[in-house]
Image (tube, rainbow, N blue to C red):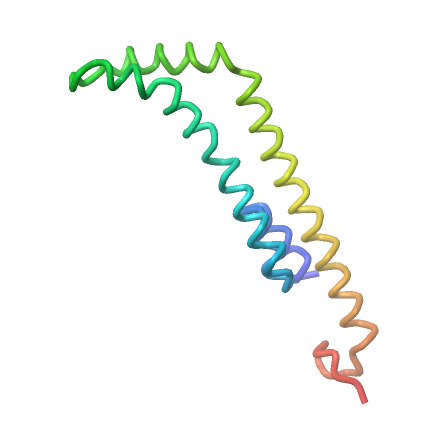
Length: 125
């Protein structure tokens, strides 16, 4: 049960960490990479939207109110893009958590059937 809880907890902290803990390194690294990209995409998208406007100020420091207004306008204009990115990230996160749970349960069951009193090491006679 400890393996299952730790695996799920690690996947909750970061999609892919539970897979790495469950010895599915390639899958875990891929999930970490994809989730990191999906996590950073809204920031990159936002900077692409308001970056040129900030550059057009010619070195002046914009006020926080100006930045907030520009950000809110960009979000309002293309909210469907941010929703798509957000829901994709959340779906991937849920996938990582459930897969970590099922793989940890599978490993636990294999250790039970293969173990011969050797502390769950899976070393049989």
